[in-house]
Amino acid sequence: MALKREIQGVVLKKAGEKTATVLVERRVIHPRYRKIVKRFKKYLVHDERNEANVGDTIEAIECRPISKRKSFRLKAVLKRGVE
Image (tube, rainbow, N blue to C red):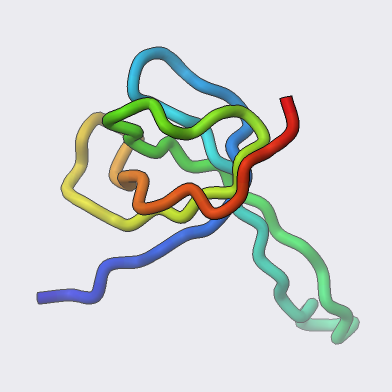
């Protein structure tokens, strides 16, 4: 069995029922300038019980594809955001 990826990010918006859009930030070293730069990517996360709200920091784990772009499910809400 392959290792399941875990991502951590901030909820940008609640897209419909049981779906959250999460912004994940990672830091990489630029190949030429050797400076640390931020790279961002958005993921759709399956939120079965609608626990996450906009601004929350969450952790998600990889799972089977739930829809075309959704292949992560909510693992835990790490920090509540301000609303």
